Each structure stands twice: as structure tokens, then as C-alpha cells.
Image (tube, rainbow, N blue to C red):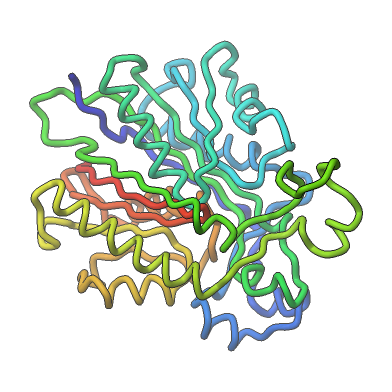
Length: 334
């Protein structure tokens, strides 16, 4: 069985910068409050006409180009988003024609902020099994279109930004030390309602899927139990770090770069404190982009490469936690 590795990465963030002072025009908050609670200073917002597949297509092309491939060499597309172009069909079907990939299989996953972790695990298995040679994983979000600035929604709205990241996974010869070494996945649906959107849905206990009351009462917006999400995020990402080290027989000294999901600076600080992982080896860009859900991790991974923090031969660990609850890790050597 052959090993897989990441052949290329790419990202796209919209040019429109939205500062905390801009957010103050949308809702009752302050720059001081946002920075103190989240560490976020800026985020990017897409234009009204732009969708998740639009942003995803830009990141995908960049990743394929970085891999030294042409788009016709991609055999499978896996897409993760919580802000799809339309309710159905899956967003990957709207991304596919924008990449000129008619005829190949495409797959939507809904793993929220852990989308890259799950996407890489699927890609790794497909490549190692020899089913496909080149798998494109795309995570794209247009969260600005889901902002609720009301009192009930602003605890999460102040975090949100837009963007997309993508990776190409392909084969690596057995003799090489490079490649994806492990993917570890977890979920616990008992925490699903700590961060979720109630409507539209078939689980509302009534005949209709959506009604005006859902809009009026805010059931169409994210609702978050901030304490539960924060505590579980810190605990689960810390757990994912230690579990990955144990599975691979490594110590923290063996890891060159840790890239966590960019949920909230305070959460990342708590993970560093709880695990004792060297802060200088943790890549963080949440102040610049805010929380972009599933797109945060691939964007951070790509920017860490651009900054020279990840080089050929670097041993990297990716960890993420998202609503669901869902969490996991990927350990790889570039």
C-alpha cells in the first residue's frame, strides 16, 4: 500500500477588509470587547454576488497549480462548507463546473471546522488504496452572509470571516519519509446543539421545514453556548494533539509546526497553556482573518508555508474542533 502526501496548497481571501470598527456599525459591540474576548482585529468579507463555490474555485486552482498539476489530473473533489451556494444539491456540484471537471466524482462533507481533517483522512485512504491518484480537498465559507448582529447572535457574529483553502493529495513512494502519517477522527453528537442552526430542518417537530416564525425568532441563525464550545474546544484539541503524538511514538520536540483551527485567540492560548506546546512553533493568524470555520485550517496551513514556517521535511500537526461536536488531527511530513 502506497503512502499519500500533500502535493500542493492554495488559499483565497476576499480583498475587502472588515475591521472591528466596521463591525461596530453592524451591531452593538466595541473594538476593545472583540479583541479582549477573541483576539480578532480584522476579517474579510466577500462581495454580495460571491458564493462558497466562487471562493473555493480560486483556492482550488491555486492548490492545483502549486502541486505542479493541471486540473484534468484531478480524480476526485471533496468539499466542506457550512455556507453552501444553495440548500441542495451539495456545494461540490456547483464547484465542479467552475473547475472544468465534468464527469469525475465529487463529494460533500459536513464536518464544520474539522472539514480539512476529515477531508484529508478520506483523501489519504483513497490515494493509499490506489483508487485515485490526485484528490482535491476544498474548504470554503462565506460566513458574512450568516451574520446575526442581534443580542442572541453577536457572541459568534463578531468572530466570522470569509475565505477558502484547498489542498491536493497524491501518492508518495514507499521509501520516502514524506507523507501523511496519521489521521485521527472523533465526534460526539451529544454536544450538537451547543452550536447549531435550528431551521430549516426536519427535526423541528412540525409539518413544515421553514416558516416565518423561524425567521422572526432567529432560528435561522447560529446559536452558541460559548462556555461549552470553548471548554470542549480546548479539551478536544489538546486531546487530539496528545493522541497523535502517542499514535506516532513522538514527543513535542519532534513536531516542527502545530497548526490548530483558528477559532479564537483565547482558545488557542488556552491550548498552549494546557498542553505546554512551545508557543513559537504554533502558527496563528486569527487576528487577521477571524474564524472562517472550515476554511481557517487550510488557509493557516498555506500561509505557514508561505511564511517559511513549513518547509520540505517539516513535521506538522493539524488539529481542529468544530460544532457537532467533531474533532481530530493529521500528522504529516512535508
